[in-house]
Image (cartoon, rainbow, N blue to C red):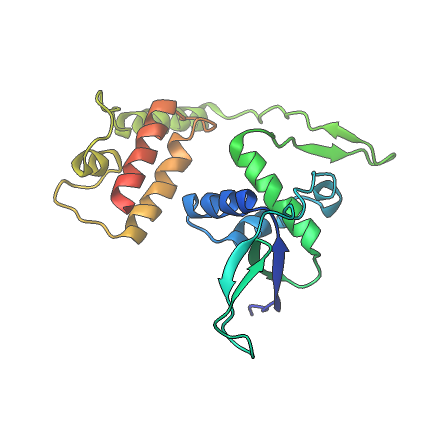
Amino acid sequence: MTIKTPKTSYTIPCSSAFRDAINALAASRQVNVADLARSILLVIPETAVREIPDPGDPPPEDREETTLKSGPSAGKLWRRKPRLQVRLSAGYNTTIVRRALYLALKLNQGDLTPKLEKARPDTGARETQKPTEPPQQSPALQEEVNRLQSIVSALMFEPLEEGVTTREDARHVMGFAPSDRPDTATVRARFRKLAAIHHPDGNYGNHQRMSQLNAAMDLLSS
């Protein structure tokens, strides 16, 4: 049974530049601002989020104009602090949410790099997690793995010399037939599958293929 968690609407005051950067990041990822904050708050301990610099409230001269829609002053212009509206589970404060969004922005810009660590059982101190040795495989299993690797390599598309410039190029890169006209949901589903293969961090990753896959996604989803 699915348990529904009550949501709270948070008003996050921030500078206009920060608001615009967060909205642009959310749009580029095809999610909303709450999804960005939630992705950080679910996987990063709150103690670590508190260590992230707080971008803070906007300066006094940074204000936006909005028209009041109700009450005695309905229809009048009101100058207020720029803000972000975020719906999340109850229990957070606006500073933590703002820090989480700032962290999401910095991770996307490449200014910060996540680092996996584990706590020492006796002292609670942190140490970098060391990679473990892969388990030994039987000759038959290794042969099957090699065969599958050959199949995957053969099925990979050859990067286009001129890059992805047309929708036909994009359909080729994403494995659609020339006559296919996939809808946005189908394109996104195919992109997620192919990105898992071509991302440079994967076993079959390739920067050029991933770059052309991103370009194909942009063309077919526009």
